[in-house]
Image (cartoon, rainbow, N blue to C red):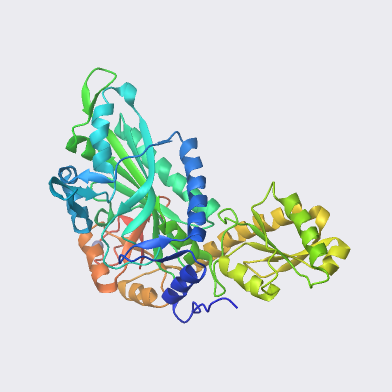
Length: 476
Ligand SMILES: [Zn+2]
């Protein structure tokens, strides 16, 4: 048997950690708050990277790399930015055995160094738009950390684009929000709410922050990606101007957008169960595992049969054949369930005689039989169905745990039991939002783009006319 996983119902947070550790996705690093991403976790990150990178390139973006170290004076140039990030900065003061003339900040995000470079690269409207992304690590000195969800150092991508007009920057901000939404829903099988953050929750230095929010199985919200319209804030701070078509000079308009290894946490928390990891097939590093079942006298024949099947499947599937003869099939079944491989194929001597195999779904445990001649079609059908049903299951869960609150008392009760997303009127006043946060630990997660009409609704806190129907929830 695989190591024990604490049931979700007993202790959700321990369940999560047990899966991360036992499925060998990540481990704690010697430096507090940091994590080691182990090969199985990293394979998942590679799948995320490949999927997203393809979508970025389809929308005209190119990759580049900017340095890890940023002169401290750069961070201080944008007032809101420095205020937002100062508490989390790690600073290099000594190097090469000497005190540095100017301390260097380990990047918490790269707007400042990128906009210092954009000043050199952008002179005219012909240089725009500039659509650059980088895959890298960043460091934010977090006090409370949790593997994948919040760590001091993490891997991410950060897109930084420059545009000639405010309208183009807004269009880009929304385009990338759409890319994130598509990736979350179609690859990760996680339904998300897409919309605007309130001013108190927006990125330090942004004019507007859009986000995607997903509901986890404990009904808490996980911010899973953000896309910022930076207006001309960074162009002003770094004096990045360009000559417009009609020969005037203007500051450049900017966006930035990012998702991180937190997405791995989202996938784990969104789909997994008490047996371990459950992965959507599109994201799974291994889609199929073939487990031959044999005794000493049937071993060679069954393995040969299994190899033929594996070779036939290889061109179209990420498939693994387990030829090990030390562990029992039962042990292997548990192990691959823990690892979240979407479909297990079992082959024994009797299957071989009938030229068939057994396929077992990780998500439901359902078994099916199919002739070897139809293996590819049968297994592709199963994988597609798992992908769809994981999404549908998560969507049904979110819908069943989204409530409308008529007044502040019922709002508080619903938040405690059962918890979830609560749609309620909000007047737009930051004071009301702050009061909810203080009294209930819930925040406005998102003002959805396709949100409900606030007409006739009143603010759940102060009773004044509502300007939005906001989605409230407790969050990671
Ligand atoms: Zn109010």
